Image 1 (cartoon, one colour):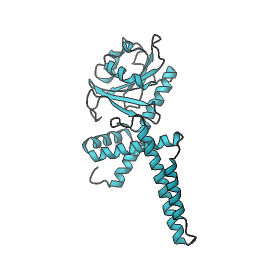
Image 2 (image 1 turned 180 degrees about the vertical axis):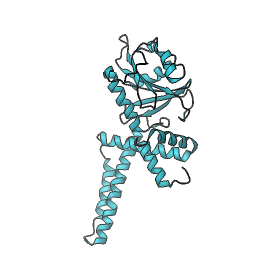
Image 3 (image 1 turned 60 degrees about the vertical axis):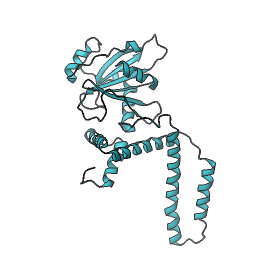
Image 4 (image 1 turned 30 degrees about the vertical axis):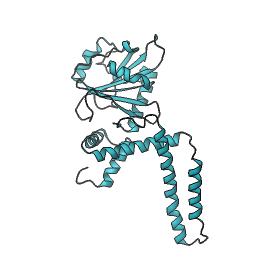
Length: 272
């Protein structure tokens, strides 16, 4: 946080980051700040975790534990017991009720978050809403290749594609043949979700495999601003349980991988 920025302003930026409302440049600035400031990184993690937990609470049915319900009800009865309806009493009740509701929602959210299967995963690089955008683009393009944003300089031919990608991105991009792990290349196009000048590749499971999922691979030139170690996989999650985005840096490139079946992604990433 800069000297000119108040804590309130900084928290607003972090909340906007978690909601996916910051611009690409501001996202990178905040990621750089989190790399240098452990307290900022902790606040970002907390905001992302709370947002994801609240979304699960809103999406999935959940019952309040009976003992908690009874304690909250007893507290409410105790607070509202006075028969005096003077403005002072009404004001006291009015202040307490939102706090009790907020506390109950927070307890429920934390309970759902702690029960999530990936609650102990590594720090997430991207806000939930951005992972949702990757996932939305993946489903749109994998279900109909015609939805991809075509690029006349990028051939839908895996033998010719590496050379053209090197011309476009400035670095060689080998290893795009994923047949060894059961996926066949389908198409390539432009995509601005990871950033400017990024490309999007679609693969589908080979007919010889026992699964029928599709995967999306995005590649962009590494500008050095993403705070991750080269060669190390980082996972971020969307608002649904099966939305998992793997990100890594290698050979002057940044790779983003997402698919229908999250259990397949690490093997694909290792193959790449």
